[in-house]
Image 1 (cartoon, rainbow, N blue to C red):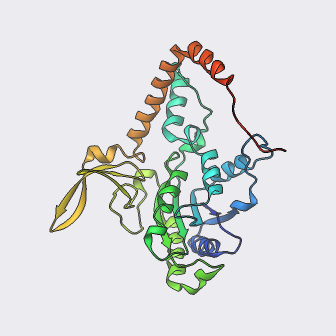
Image 2 (image 1 turned 120 degrees about the vertical axis):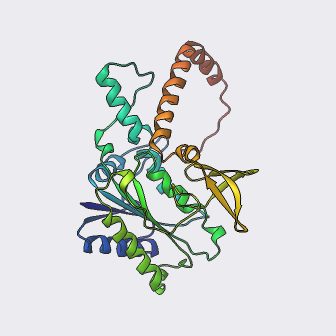
Image 3 (image 1 turned 45 degrees about the horizontal axis):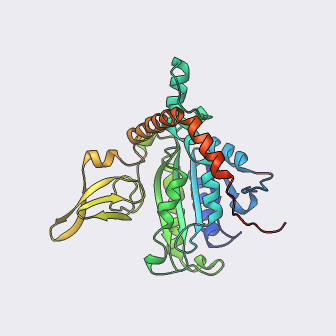
Length: 303
């Protein structure tokens, strides 16, 4: 079993130190480990896109059984470069429902309104752990990091089995002053290693509990008494139990989480139906796009 570590911070900075603690623990549990530095990858974007290492990283991800991502927290969230990498390898081609349904429909000869390149290796079970390292102490400066890390694993339905947020490590390497944080980071690694090879529905979550029983985070959207998890979309109702506010999730509300395979199937069908409707108006859309393109007030830097 192989665990892939992705370091999204400075070389030998606090996020990478925490990741190495996790990987050491995973290795001690019997896993083979690899470490990739985000800043070693060439990630292209824009009109001057050149050599790109996304495919190389994608192959490393497909070859692993577990993923641990450790990142610093910038401006309450994760670095833009990590989001760029996630945007490049996530989406329909890495979605387990898209992959399974496209393979099935191709085999049965069913019509696909919109097709995607898929790789059946996506269907292999994987687990993940997250570590987010912030300099600020108050939670309000760190609250968006873990929810956005989930976007790296949602499409491929990689089961997140542990997640950790570390505070007060704002200067280079200062996480070394926080021995409990390093011990907890090591536990992320051993927890990930303990769940390697387990199918999504059998992987056990071993991290700190949150309000949401699907993603185990507590970032919620409120609309009156209606509650929706901002990370995964599970729906519930605000309630007071023993004098304390809580969220009660129904089976139907849990099923609408983007982590639920049924919701992924609904999304696949929605994409196919939307593409079919658009195809009926393709000539009109093409004509209007050409008309709009003639009005071009853009400016750009001199090169």
